Amino acid sequence: MSIEEINAICDAAAQEPLPEPDPHREGIDWIRAEDGDIKHPLQHRSFESSVRFTKQARALGLESLQDKDLDQFRRGFSTFIGQDLAFIDRHCGQQRFVRSGM
Figure (cartoon, rainbow, N blue to C red):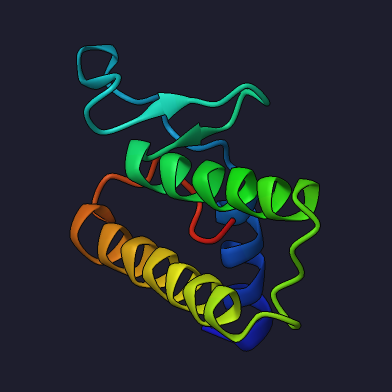
């Protein structure tokens, strides 16, 4: 099999839609976000918490680069989210309803 044939097969597979998840597992293994994407509940909550935290800090006039403790917390939170997503992908990845990454 040539490289071109392999690339064509991969391109065709990448264009196929993801399978629909089991409706009985909604809220456990998956949720549908406001934008219609299917996400793992922990992934979605982690990301939404990060966004809310950042918005609240800005509303209070706090800039993480000026406050070392706030910056350390923000970095730790971001690290946790990354580890959370890696764990979900590694342990729940056999059910490919969610595309990796955000």
